[in-house]
Length: 167
Length: 433
Image 1 (cartoon, rainbow over the protein chains, first blue to last red):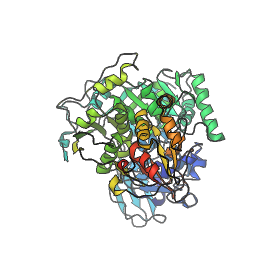
Image 2 (image 1 turned 90 degrees about the vertical axis):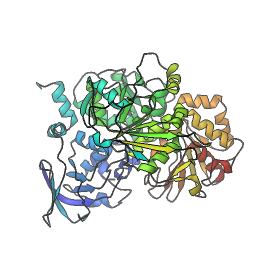
Image 3 (image 1 turned 90 degrees about the horizontal axis):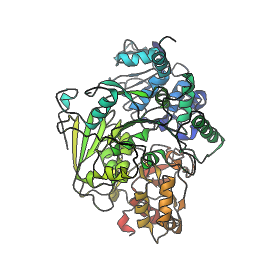
Image 4 (image 1 turned 30 degrees about the vertical axis):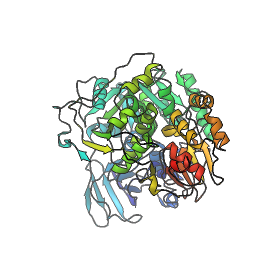
């Protein structure tokens, strides 16, 4: 899978309350949740983010609550992929389980300009290319086990295939 | 202080930690080491009124007629309940209908329920040596009883409801040893806040946290549940305390089926070992906007407050209410403060009623609520306006956590919270006693 889009850069320890505040959790509709994506830390963000855009986080992206509404809100905004230095573990699981592409990149991403730089992300190769400069960042490809969940489009299809291999 | 032989993590020549043993047993393996991916049987799977509706939607995609075991699924409407608005009522209805249709044994209705992580141990649903997943990050609470318990998302819960299994990467374990005796006014909340302050919100990311030492042996089960509850605030996959007499006493009247306690080997391999002498530890306060922004109470004195909350899955248990009541007895809440007391379960509520604690709170002019997560996550029952400050015995103080993005939440244990409600600002309990 290869994605190209505009980068939006966030800092370290972006928690799931920041991604989607609890007051909006009485729905789980991705499009509805997307209207409030990152609202408490960047109020104008829901109006800025466009389908295909790429989120770039720092350390511990998605920490805090286990709400799956956080990756759902990101997916609902049409974000194609999330890159972070490292993800908090429940967010990491949830993103893979709902089929939101994510990738960890331990290189310093501080040079990426938020809201202007364009990136190309290659999940299989584990590369992130800054399109204006051509600079390539190396990222961590998934272990095969998770690659299989992603290839199936998420955990539900993966488990269905296991429970009923013929179907 | 940190020591350890982390470079050998993954080696099979050493003994195993409690978590490694539990995961190995439930995966049907002789031994596992950190980094292994394992598929394990699930003893209990939990959802609430926010996460279960998403899980139920995903469950529908499996096109199955039944859940893997109606006795091993727990559904608790506790976050936006008693229903705060029509949308929340619809979500609660969805899980009520699901529970009825699939004959879920452990569904807890309003009036019989409690905040999930206080309720499940109280009801005897948590046993040492078990694997428990919950679509709620504070599921790690159950490690206090010597179980492996971790938070997952809704899709994981959906899959577990179908197959009764989940996959895990075996975590490396960090050991935290607390030496000395607990000083007066210092409890489990202070130990865990101190620890998170030391290692940071990602300090135990993907790791198991083993809590041990003389101070832990002295700690009540309520205090232990508070500590394991906040392992997630350090990024931990789980937090746990190995079973001992305190555990067995707690389980004695709650357990109808046998269980097997599991312990770390003497030669278990820890990624890191931290040792703290806590004999002179002050009560701890986490400043906004992060649970690792921790200071002793002496450095937090004088911060004005508009709200104090005593409750939540972290500190809404009977011991917390006893401590708060002892501090506030025959005093009044400061005129500029709204104090909310939320017993975490119906049983705790009744106990507090019978012990006269609720009268103490009401006489002090605090508001006492039925069990709900409510204000902890900014759901309802005590939302903050712009610029307001709260001191809460809850677990998170992120931006906007309890209301307006420009409101602020400080975290503490129940003694400091009750004393500060009287003073109208953050104080040490000794200042109002």
